[in-house]
Every structure is written in C-alpha cells, then in structure tokens.
Length: 344
Image (cartoon, rainbow, N blue to C red):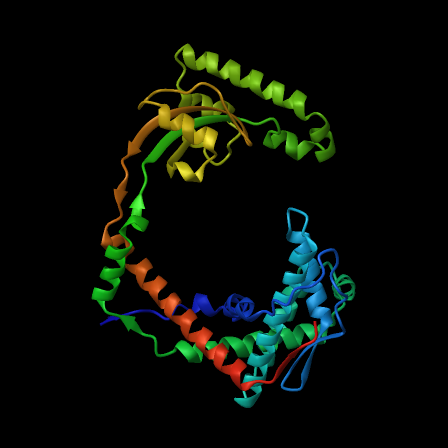
C-alpha cells in the first residue's frame, strides 16, 4: 500500500467543496423570461434559521461584474438560485459545527480580518467598503467562522483516506493513457517589438497610448522591419534580442523562450513555429503583444509521459476525486436530515 499525503491545500478553504456541491441541488423552477423577481429579505430557512438576502445580493452583483458578456434574465435567475443554495450548504455546515461544539480560535478570525483590512489605506476606507457592500464586520467574522468550522468538518470526513494500491494508480494510467500524451515541444528565440513598449507604459498616460495606438503600431512594425534587415545581413538574433527586444523576461537570454507547447502560445505564433526548420528565422509575426521575429532552436517530438513522471499526479487526482465524492455524500446526508425552505 502506497501512503499518500493528505493534501491540505485541498482544504485551505471549505468553500471549494461547498461551491462544487451547492448547484447540484438548486431549485430549477422556471420564472419569467424578461425579468427577475425581487429578492426577498429572507431567501431561505434552514432548520428554523433564516438566511438573509444581503450576502446573496452581494455575490450576485459580483457575478454580474465578472461577466464579460450580457447576462439574460434566466441566467441571472440561475445565478441567484445557485448562490442561495451555496448559502444553504454553508448554514448546514455551520449548524453541524455548533452540534459538534467546534470552537474557532479567535486569533484565526482576527488574523483573517486584519488581512482583509490591509488591502485598504485605513480603517475608514475599510468600513466604507463594508457599507457599500451592505455587510458589517460582524458579518465577516461570522463568515470566517463558518468557513473555518467547515474546513475542520471536511478534514474529518477524509482523515482516513491514506493511500491507494500501486496497481490502482497504474490501472488509471493505462486506462487514460491518451491524457498523458505530450505534444511536440518547441524551443525558440525571438525578438518582440511592442506598440506599447515598457518604457512608454512607464512614462505615458494610458489614454494617450490608446489614442495613438495605430501610430504606435505602425512605428513598432517599422522597427521590426529594421531588425529583420539586420538579421538578413548576418547579425545573430540573440544579439538583437538583447539589444532591442521588449520581452524583458527573455531579452537578456538572447530571447530564448525555452521549451513550450503550441497550445501555450497564440495561434499565429504557434503556426509560424510549426512551419520552421531548425535554425530558420520567421518572417514578421503579429500577436496581441506586438511583432515577433522567431528562430527555431530545437524540438522535442510528442511522446507519452512515463508512468514514473505521472504517478504522483495520479495519486493526488484519485485522492481528490475520492474526497469530493465522500464530502458530497456527507452534504447529501445533512440535507436529508434538515428542514430547508427556499423563498425565492
């Protein structure tokens, strides 16, 4: 039996599991297409304890801000219902913690509060932020307490999960071998000329840069053409990268990007590299970063990652999968014993 570490990182916050589990039980009752009903002051009741709307409204607005595209009314409704369901699960965990007489160290709560405050200039700014969000410092402390209790409870649920047979790990590797195939890897050197160079960004206003975007882009391309001419005259790309490249992370290494897979870079960059021969330098390639000249140094053919390289990752995956299932079953058992009312 191979002993496997209990990856505490997985339990740094219990909300990881709770977030995954909550939506599986969300009420899917349809509502109107064009609007979402107002959220009531009390959105749910769990074993007689009310869940206030203020956290729901805050999380709902945060979800809207994060969205990159307009959200339809049915989508908004779904978000609200999912957030409510997660709060129901958190309340179940809190009540379970109370039954188990779990006491959260006040120092843990205070440390978390101070960490949150440190993001603001002073106490007044912190309190203004709370006011804007419709929550109090006591609300924050309660939330930290809930999460800490949940973390303790969930750790208890998986504490005896200590290992997996090597044969089970190897079987997973064989059954999923295609997932462990490494594609062709490329190593290149490049020169990057950006329309918004690091120097310009440091010394200019963003508005000015945006207003002159096309002019700066034209100048960047012209500069790249000048460098390309030097390459064709025999100057080494490594020397030119040190002298001109705006890629500050690689310029002093002669523009060496090291090995990478095509999926890790923009398509135009990857497609160009894939067509190069060893030692060949590309024509000018444009990406969202700017203009590149690329030299292919070497490649590594695609291959299957050996079992020895993947063994640890598979063990961790199996542990996490098993832990998630066990926690899911535990949450289901709490739900079955609880009296839950949803008012939205």
